[in-house]
Each structure stands twice: as structure tokens, then as C-alpha cells.
Length: 161
Image (cartoon, rainbow, N blue to C red):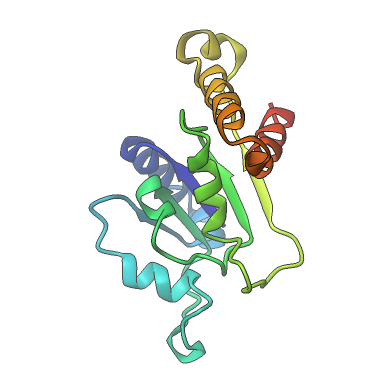
């Protein structure tokens, strides 16, 4: 399972929240990755199914990561993504999902994507949902039908609101 967030402070908070609870720590065995992370090899050995099986480990079940890990590393041994926040750029959501949904490397019959959207009171201030929708519509107007997957993702995100 992977929890993605845009912010290092949020990743730190989530990690500490899980880690300080003995039951959650034993159940999820969390590891954290941020832009300064030196854990890339450990993360790859636990979440990258393209590694030789003798290099794969099962030490961690939960990865808490910032968006810096949503590019350039395969994480397709995970079957669940939780988007703790929705980025202002909707293509970031697609990049996050692309870490576990690898073309030609299907490990799961289904993958699960869960999105957290701030309550309506907070949306009035941060407006990330409105900005993401505006950008998605702009992309769709420019590129047309090539953005079907983005539109589908945003509908999924909106339905979890």
C-alpha cells in the first residue's frame, strides 16, 4: 500500500502517526520516502516487482511517499494507492497511479485507488478541487479525446468526495 502526499511535512506526520501506534506499526510495517530519502534501494526491493525475485524483500507493507517518488521508480508490488491530497496538477494523480499500474506487468486483478478530498469548508479556502477540474478541462480542450483517462480519474476522485 502506498500513501502519496505532496508535502514532506504531511508525510512526516502520517509516518509518525502510524509508527507511534504499536498495533499499526506491526500491521503495516511503514517506511517513508521524501525528496531527501536514502531509502530508494530498500523501497525498490520491497515494492518493485521487476527486480529479480532473489533481490525482493517483504520487510514493509506501507510506503508513505511524497510526489518525488511518483516518477522514476516501479512500485507495482503495491495494489493500493491512497492519495492523501489531490495535487493542483491532475496529471500528478495519473503519475502516482502509474507507479503501481505498469503496462505489461500486471500483478493484481484489481488495483485500488482511494482519494482524500478536504471538507467543503476547507475547499472554500484552498480550492484545489476547483483548480484541478479547471486544468483538466483546459487539457481536454487542447488535446481532446487523448485525455479520457484523466477525465475518468477525476470522476473517480469526485465520486469519493
